[in-house]
Amino acid sequence: MSKLTLLWKIYFWIFSFVIIISIFFINSGSKHEWIMVSLDIVGLIGLFGFAYQKRILSNIFWRGWWVAAVANEILFIATSGKNFISVTSVITLILIFPMYVALFIYAFGCKYILSSHSDTSPEP
Image 1 (cartoon, rainbow, N blue to C red):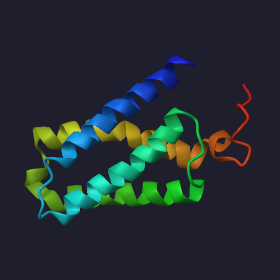
Image 2 (cartoon, rainbow, N blue to C red):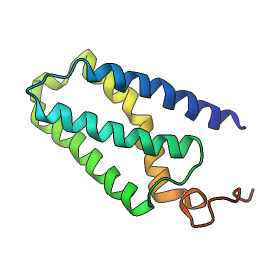
Image 3 (cartoon, rainbow, N blue to C red):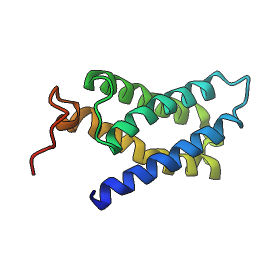
Image 4 (tube, one colour):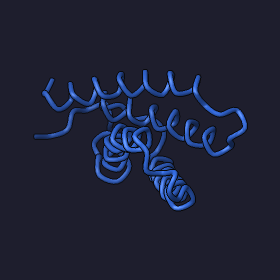
């Protein structure tokens, strides 16, 4: 196992913990927060597939998820105004950015994971 693969697996478990904890702090009246957490939970499934090099759903699904999740983040930033710049928001963006990078690679660039021959190892 490469060091990079190990780092992605560690990140997956840390981010999973953060998402589970964040569920307890959601404002029950905020639909947007529930949408964000829902997207993050689905993203965790893809992050697991990326970190453990497993095919989960199709690359078309993950491409659509990635576009929706990034659009949701941009919409959140655009509509939050001055309230967006807070310590919590910055920490959240720092924590979630690697997931977006991993799922971009998973959806658009990791053909050996998402191919129909995912049972074989990628060639060096």
